[in-house]
Amino acid sequence: MRQITLWWILALFLSACGATVNPDYSNIPASDSKIFYTGRILKTVSTVVLSWPGTQVTVKFHGTLLSVTMEDQSGDNYYQVIIDNDSSYVLKPQKGKHTYILARNLKDRVHTVTMFKRTEYIFGKTEIYSFATEKRGRFLPAKSPHKMTIEFYGNSITAGLGNEHPQGSSFNPQYENNYMAYGAITARMLGAEYVCIARSGIGMTVSWDSLIMPELFWRLDPFNPYLHWDYSTRQPQIVVVNLFQNDSWLVQRPEHPQYKLRFGDKKPDDEFFISSYERFIDTLATIYPQAQIICTLGPMSAVHPGSPWPGYIKIAVARLHTRRIHTFFFPYFVRHGHPTIKDHEQMAQMLTQFIRDSVLISSQ
Image 1: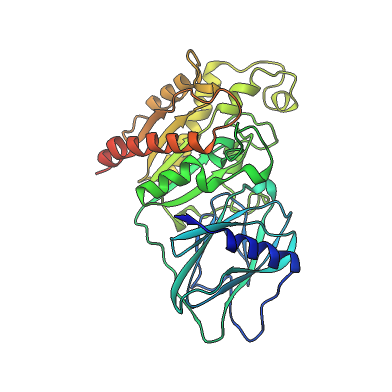
Image 2 (image 1 turned 90 degrees about the vertical axis):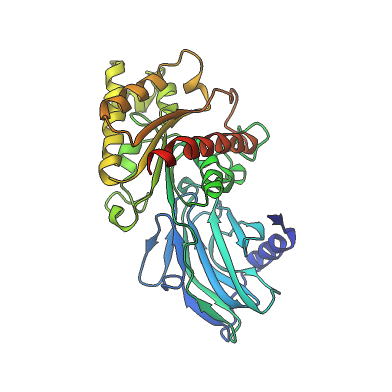
């Protein structure tokens, strides 16, 4: 896929100018059924809210240009905009409500444009109001080209935090690119629809912040504990869980407020971590009764030689007594910072090979 910088410059220019859609253009509300969304999105009467990393919106239209009107909560989000699966650029919306030209000067024919949320929800949400093309253009129903869905649950590794930084050590949103995180790359390599539920710093039993994954994963809107995702709307064929990295750090920090909140003054034993993991995976297996589930970990310090954390996962999976739950561990090759894009590409190669050789075969 070739990269086009002209689109990026144009989008930023129009963003700075607060460009608006010409009322003579053909408009369609973001909530229209012709627009195709991937991932957990919150629909209102006329708008759609994107929060989770990897959330995507695809518009199919006949025309020469496409614009979007949307409101970004923070001005810290980044989107990968893909045109006709052929070219892409990065769009950084301003804070507030603005209109952006996503594509222009296209050939007068059918096109598809996809917006992929590169940043996780801690950097804010984006509310999409409408799309527009020239008045003689028209919008067509966009559908998923994929026959399989793969869903990821994880922390900063899965989110792609810092992966565009040379050492993977930045917490700045400009260096987070979920489009080039191992999960998204794996999904593209398998030709699968991609869903990502990830938050930097989150753990299975304790996190750097207040929520742990068993409390977060139910949510449709990550900011609202009362809105639960309807698991009957989409059943993934493969689910990947990459958690315990933050637990492995925080269990060594009894002075941390979240340690005290979760564990009190007593360090939990091995059985606590094993049974906690077992319960979460069993819940996923119940929610997704046909899915192949991959329990993975790495490639950071939680999988260093002699680490007990892969063993906890193996025991938990063995207790569940089902052939559709698998273990696969990345080797310990990221010793400083977070995985870079090069590391994520290596991880995706490993995971894709495992899925092809072990998971897809066993599901047949």
